[in-house]
Image (tube, rainbow, N blue to C red; front, side):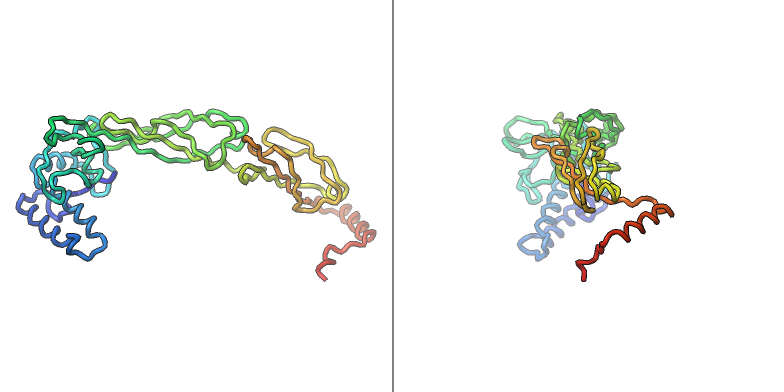
Length: 320
């Protein structure tokens, strides 16, 4: 969550006295009151101003806020120390809240607690019971690049990961760790692998979030992936295309023999059923014929000239 500079929101100096803070609040509250202001974000600003005043008007809450504010600037990522207990503060009304904690921002709740589902967190609102504020850590998304072959075999890979951790003063740091990632057989590009507890740390003893790794295949020298299917450009000699042939074709699990039919055309797709990505219904592998010309030399030129003289062939006859 982002750190909120309540002094900046009210437009006062950090050393401002209570009269100055109250005066600034009243001026801004009149300006942005939803019943008066015509600005589109008036209600949001009014709530933000009220939240800032709720803290700065109270010496104890202001003191606690100042304790955290030494190391952050407005808008920076903020997390309170893991041992912070948001208890001991009293809400007697003020701002726009009338003594309730509903509507306060996540930043406010992380320091002073909040009125949560089923009760209050971190405060005593007259019932005599205090509860510690707790929140599960946020999830993190990242990308893992794997060879295409991993989808066919399944494996475990070790990655270096900068895991978020909290320092004692509440600041977030990144610690480099090695994580073992299980790559399941049949994984597809765009799917996610979940690593439980490897996200941002939780607050108040709550569990950390999870790390979600989005799978991306590394570029392959032979194959292109489309959904569950694979595509391979297959070079064939002109005489193989003309006469037909049996040729070796690579697949991710080994070479197979493929029959090229006589009079094969460039761009023609030869289907190898079930040789695509593994799944409940495996994909297919399509070998796309690419007619490769031999190196040009005098002998080859003579042979091509002989063939030209013998064949009555015009490849552009249909363009007349």
